[in-house]
Image 1 (cartoon, rainbow, N blue to C red):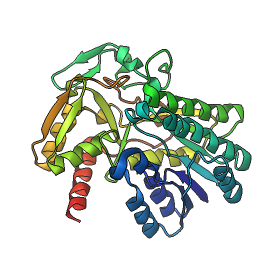
Image 2: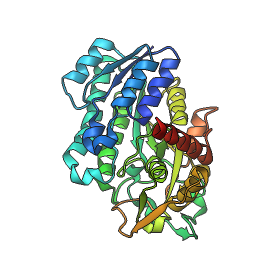
Image 3: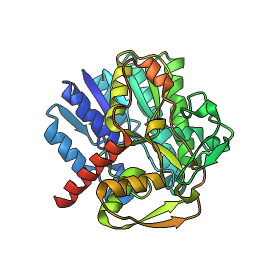
Image 4: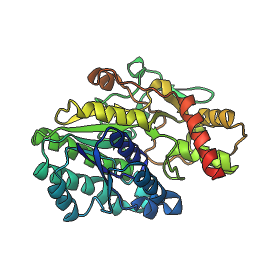
Length: 350
């Protein structure tokens, strides 16, 4: 089995490399450390690449940009991959507004470049596209919400388990990041349905884990833990910190990709996140991190919410659970935070 992972030095990409390498695949990673260009030194993924090279003997790294219209097809023609896991992206809601052309070229242009290469050289191979819940724009903000002491939540019983895949994605504000990812999401579905290719789209909530290199503009929970351990001030942006997200461990995400790849269908769409059980507001996450780490965080509040940001979002996992027999979220939020705090302390001690 020859598997290609794009964004192979990022959180989900590196988890995929380790997962498939452990199962005997020849794993090819495509990554050119664009994350450092986007986020500065804090986004540098070269240390992750060094770890993958040391830990995965059949891992082959390609210093290649997914936007390369000549290099990507040449790689596909040469290697004829039996599976593609497309994780590479510009992932920041905020950064997209200051670099809109880069954002769109990566998230939309890079995605169609990969899909077209797959169509030409390995059209029967399962293609996993990592999308985002931001394709729903700020539509969930128009639902009836109830405000509690620490969080918002849905008041309509139809959304008791969260947002499903049938929630509309248009006629609302997305942010430029949400729009570029929606473009990639739709073109991935279209390659699946129009060309009958085994393409699966996974709309992620907050995907996280101990190896997440969270920065101020991306990777909320990782950045929160890092800030707490460093004793720095954490700034809560908008909604008084009561905005809600669902967290899912990267290992559970990769397990879903693997199960779907064993029985792929053209153009399928799934929401994937921690679901209601792993949903928490920023304030609730602050309290949990303080409890696990044994620290008291210094907080600041910025009352200006990010445009298009969700007030309350967590994924309805019904379709995913029904389609992938035996798959479920295995890591609770407390366990995720404990693992991240332990990893953060080890990194600081090294």
